[in-house]
Amino acid sequence: MKDRIKDLSGFLLKIWRHPKGRVGAVLIALLIFTAILAPLIAPYDPYDVTARSEKGLAPSLSHLLGTTITTGQDIFSMLIYGTRVSLLVGVVSGLSIAFLGAILGVISGFLGKWADMLIMRLVDVMLVIPTLPLTIVLTNLFGKSYGLIIFIFTLFGWTGLARVVRSQVLIIKKSTYVKAAQLAGASDFHIMFRHILPGVSHLLIMNTALTSAGIMVAEAGLSFLGLGDPTAISWGKMLAEAQSGGALLFGHWWWILAPGIGIFVSVFAFMRLGLALEEIFNPRMRRTSSIRKLWKSMNGAYLQDVFHSMDEEPVPVLQKERVAVRE
Image (cartoon, rainbow, N blue to C red; front, side, top):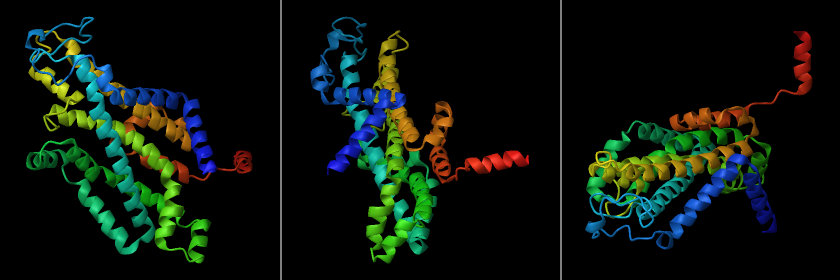
């Protein structure tokens, strides 16, 4: 127990010493603090739509970000409460995707044969299903709840991670400690979840942070399209209401800027933490610029680069010198 606490404290210290990790951790802590203490921080009830006399007010000391044009709701209070939805959907979906992708990836890579064929064919089928039309159909059939949104994100988000984990498990299962466990009579279940899964756990942590950032943007987009929970306040819903209420037409730019900044800060925080974790776990990837990492993480090629860099064999110094002499 003491060793685990020591390892955890050392890991957190590495994150704090990393410039990107420190920025990401501080911002995420502020977001969590804001979400938990939203009733104490928000000066008004954001769900109160009865303040018709105060609608369309400009930013002032009493209303820091003004009020909405249509219902008179306090925009700053709405911004505070929107943090809850963004963190809930992003973090829960990220953890669910990491869990499902890791389990199926380990099973596919270690057991092989029929299990590998079944899971990989399922991955191929899931990758060609159009997500947005199916999301529209499911929300119309089962209701527009964030629980359903999390389920949809998890259902379609685990495939890429499972393929990458499988490729890494194919390498790890050939290691000596795995073969020793097999010779000792350990069951496949014990080997998969006590020996192989910890070997890819650090990559799952990194993937969770990066995936959470992407899901926050996706959730805002779905809420903007009207596919989110209509009874909850989210940043995407605020943008949709600003558009329908004519915020740009009447010059109420702060109504649009506030949720936009909220989305940017939350995504920026999780991206910085994810990139910091990647550089801590895999120092070789520090050569790649952050902008290129961000682009690759969006098109699904980033995790592949991480795994390939870990599989590269470092060239010994003496061998490098011999090659230089020959040339």
